[in-house]
Length: 152
Ligand code: DQA
Image (cartoon, rainbow, N blue to C red):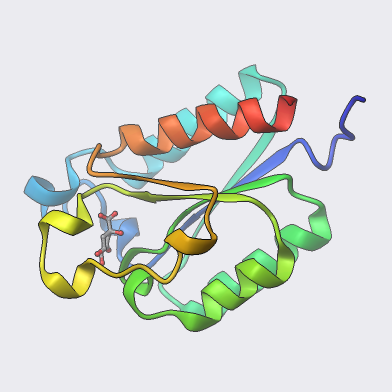
């Protein structure tokens, strides 16, 4: 059965400090800016006939609000890099389990190859899957999966 237009939309959520991509620790996070990543993801989704919106916030509650709004909008899939909140945020995880929108967790760096306190994620256990250590390509791979999921 054809999906309605609302469920054919994707929201990409970027957590704190990801607005600094390109200049923030480039040896860890790469040289591509967030704007460039977002532009590419939006174009890829548009070419596939899917609406994609990107949202970045340095504030936990704003990310919770955006997840709740995604539910009201009928979004069909989320792509999430919780950034530092990966390791701390019960409330963002609770928002995700409340709205029950499937999501892929993305990290530019391999969090398991870094400090021990980065090894735990509050999100992986409730995600469809996780992509890490592949730099900004991780977002493209997550989007490829999301598009396949929405078309299934
Ligand atoms: C990150 C990894 C986190 O540990 C870190 O706090 C970030 C970015 C990543 O994409 O590799 O801000 O999520």
